Length: 238
Ligand code: UDP
Image 1 (cartoon, helix red, strand yellow):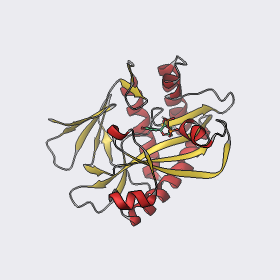
Image 2 (cartoon, helix red, strand yellow; image 1 turned 90 degrees about the vertical axis):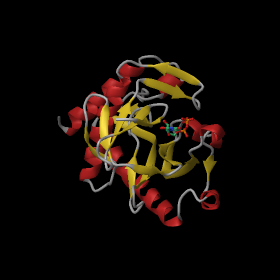
Image 3 (tube, protein in one colour; image 1 turned 45 degrees about the vertical axis):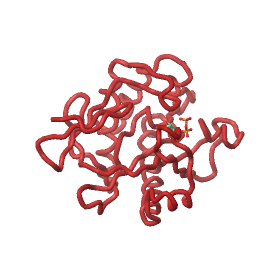
């Protein structure tokens, strides 16, 4: 196996098959575009375990993902894809950058879910972009945008139910999509779904159960990640 790519939270390796890659989840955490950094024992295992559980549940409901199969403690086997250089954020409740951008308080429930696009570019700090910017930069075709928006809203409905059954409110989350290789014919969900990429609040207390504990120095980061995994596994059957 050779290392194909190393990102902030994951490594991607080739395997002996051209149609399979190994995605390994790291213990490192970063926030604020990589300015804040830390290592958390067990983060890789917890995020891998939640991602594979959620991908399997989504696949059952007809959502296509890059998951092929589980591959041990911190790894998944995935299909090779060309990652679309957009982060697709879906929001149900105002938090984070939307609170800053709108001046509305965190916790305000949105009338309808909001879908936002961010240009995946570390040097630029992942700026928000609109569909005209995306067309100009040729980041995705109009048809791909329609597909990703619809998939984002479908995933939002499914994840809201799954987390809801685990006593968690899905505030917002980020998705990434990839074009299947070598033909680029299909767009599938890629990357991870974990407390690193979702805001999750306890349904009763509204306690934060996600990466905001790291961003805001609230402590107990891995305890809450483990609690999220335990609750989702319990609610969806082991
Ligand atoms: N998010 C992410 N990766 C990013 C940026 C955001 O996973 O590079 C997630 C974040 O955890 C939250 C949602 O996307 O669940 C919306 O994030 P927001 O735009 O509020 O930005 P932030 O507050 O993270 O700066």
